[in-house]
Length: 592
Image (cartoon, rainbow, N blue to C red; front, side):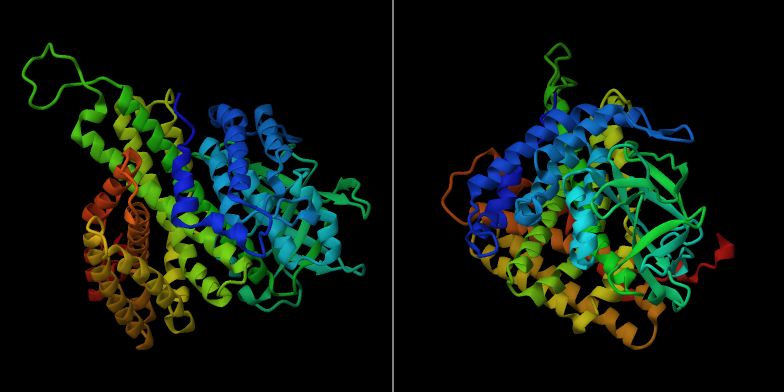
């Protein structure tokens, strides 16, 4: 059986690269220490291995069913989720007065990653519920917090986000769901929502839907959107659960992957009796919802990296154990076969997976550390701006390249990889959702180049460049990292020049020309950032006199692979962006 994870991969990033143990010395996380963090991760790894991993294949093979009354899911899913909450992870990042552990986000994200590795379908319920609780903590009034936060944190209630509609999809400006004010200060919602993960089930006592809708007098477009909390069942002031709240399941969506995460079409107010509560200010719903969406986008990147990581470990073990063929120079057909890993092309595929997924993991841990620094009041404005720039990259880059890693995992296993007897085909199907949900990668590209890069006159990119330069300077001091530092320095300069040219196009009024190759810019920025994070990992290994072991050699090999085989791709993206390649723009729709 493949090991669930390699713990040193987590410890290295958490402590050696991003210094999460130093957070325990801050006022915000006073009284904590590394031993406490390791104990949390020990528990997460055990629960993930014992409760989540065993039912991953079962959830995939037994999709949710609906008999017109109830959605049925395997009982093992409810048991796994209960084990998560019984271990206290539901409130891990929340204040102690709410029943939480007040842990750094770096630690809770590392723990959550372990559940995603073990069972991505099950972990989706957890991500949505935690993000729901974080949004309510940030924007809900005290009455809503008192009524809904405690059961969300202990797993009695689960949460969802209800944005898309059949006629709107990602175009939220076109949503039609309405919310009419009522005399008691509540609202009555009417409308349909599509693609709602966790929208209907019997896994919890209640479901808290966060719904985007328009009030009758709302202005057109996104400026008229408000956010409402809509429980599946009414909840009395004393917390008692009452009657159904006119939220109707219309149908289930049948997915390629993530099959254990029930995905629904919901109708609110079929009898015009669906009660909702305003969250935040009127007509500020999208601003509130982005609090949850940005958390979800980073979580998508985490989940993508972890699916890639799980596939990598599975294919690595297979390659180590599977005897097949002989070295190219072997002349004796009766000589013993060798493990697959002894073939150089198999090692190429394994090294590519390692470079992609461990680079994606580093990106996720980087974002988590920024969240913690903000919580500790460290350079808050700058760190928020840097996190804003990194968020579309953190969602999109792993969801594209960790998927490539899953593809390579299938290839390493050959014919077996294409069968359901091994989990790598399931991991690929699960990961294929990640470039789509929580904002497609095309939307992330437009967000990065169209909004995040120009914001505050490019201050976010300047901050990113300063972080990169510090590691370039450190890498230039060591023989093992000098060439990586020099290559990154050159590429960073080219990236800056390319970005300035694009911004000049926008200032000239050619917005279509500015954004036509945003997808290439996203790949370019992502590769640059991941190259930096590989240099950062290499620096952590060579900045000292510690003896090199297999772990260190493997990290440096993956770093070399990325710089030699992946970073050179940036030159082509830079040329495409500088030249304004416009074949898609010139191609009329009728020609297709």
